[in-house]
Image (cartoon, rainbow over all chains, first blue to last red; front, top):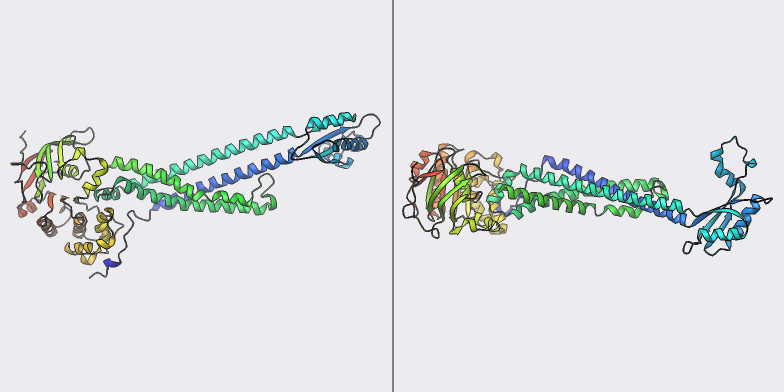
Length: 296
Length: 241
């Protein structure tokens, strides 16, 4: 006699739980999710870096002062600083010492040159009011009014390049992210097709037992959505750990000032499991419905 | 070519559980597998479907359990014109049909109990409403001690009895069997036949496709005989056989 008690019976899942392909598929989807999350983190860090550089450049200007006649470079730089400090929209003005100016050109001239013999221009660093910065023209007018031979560099050329590069990097990141999401969807669709083909007889039996197409498609949809969500969790966790390592390695600025990862950036990986599950659910549903319709 | 026999005093499509009127069938663009079939089965009848391999027995059963469509003619099932039934409503119709296959088609990842309960779960029944029924049905087919067994551990005869239990658990109006004794020994074949006869006594219409002439002869039930897709012999119809 059997010791089976129908009263304690729990229904088995409609589809077999384990499949040899599931492990490989989970790994592939987890890897794609990891890459997608890493791409998202990179885009965020790139965007932050670009904004940081822009902020720095828009808040500063450099003035190159060349002495005229018998005036000493130090005197010309001091006069330029005084002239600029009165311009509206200018904060702190500081004339760089001779040594600092020479130190800036030293790498290009080498040890052989005697910098004291060269007419190295003096630099004046100007901190601008960030809310209402003075324009380069206003600074130029103030210098000319004092009869100074000076060139104002408000970094606008660099600023455009940086903004252009940051925008380009952002779009590349979005493109790569979309490509990876599409690849994940295609992999899941392919796996669904393979899973349905391998379980052709299960599908037939369910059909004969009176199951509706939607019911069977939903079984596969839930199976692959759950698998992709778990894979997404693995991938997102991996990417978050990688982001945290970059943040810790780089101290306050992330890995480098070039790619500053913030702790809040790590939140970007949170939607990954849900997004992976949704992509898988849609791909599995469409694939399963199409295949079941052909089977019957 | 001989003219196909039509049922003498054939039932109206409305009264018959199954009625074919000049039905043909083909797979894709291939030749006709079934040709101009006309017959009807009364509720509660018992018929054998015989014919050589390739004669079209399985194709005829496929038409009946709605896995294929006629390419020509009119087919009525439970009084409804099959061609007029929307695809969405076909699963409800399939729940009134039990099917048993030679190769059993059991789900290997489910126990005997789970396999039997499958149609009831799909129909949305609560487990508490059918646990006892399923256990009693398995006992009736002689699998009382094998309820928790996986199909892979069952013998051929046990698998076929399990497949029968699954096919009838929903109390279908018609039971179709495609070579149900093909994979079991003679003694088990007779045991399975007795199950079909008992089910028929309970009111289920039974149609069994088989090669087994001995089984047919022993049963004394009427026969539908197919040759090259045509019906060439038809036993008495119009009431319970």
